[in-house]
Length: 294
Image 1: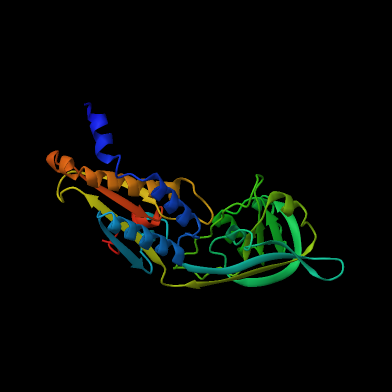
Image 2: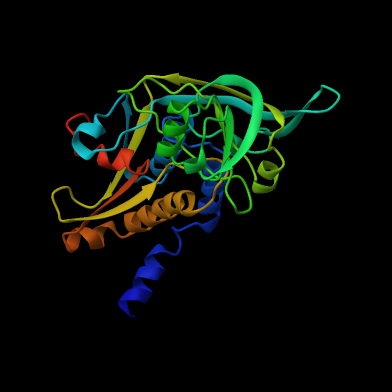
């Protein structure tokens, strides 16, 4: 029997495609953006699954600022809880008509948007570089740098879109070392954005910041401590919905660690240890070497 066939035989009864599918389904229902409570819940669920599979695992939730900016030049966001967001247009009869809301998709609220209610005239600006002091600009992109420039220049609320189907994920990542932003921001579909120019609209975001977000970092090991390590990494974070590489990567990591558990004696004989890491992208991974997270 060849080596590959032997490995497949040893692991075929362990790897479970249905279990992986169910995990992806569960993770996709959580709004696992960085700074949220849901990303911590995701970490706890994955840790519980590994425990059930008898894989050695340790979950640590780092609470509060990680001090990343000092060491890496980027930062972790403030803690953020989203309750709802809605964009409305005033009809000719004076009634408010809902254009988009988080009842349809959580992505309507720009991630880390501050709370607030703003009424005024929407103006289609296109590129943020074209902004000329409009109260509520409708812009074709909203990287965090663009948002802060718009607000500093006078925008009271921001509506973002992108020229492709669906509602785009935008994130503001407000740092701990600055005053929190104050202009609510929403994200909508391209065709809806084109209909808002010079319309009377209302932006409402119900959310809150807090100073103690939790950053979950899950470490799982198969093999002897001290042996040379192969590192496998998956990202816990992603907005709801989304069964893309982050959720599916975490599910694959679980199944790989379960398969390696079945081969642990082979790993020990060859002096190899495997560590699986599930953590938020960038912040959870880079937080590990910093003094705050060591």
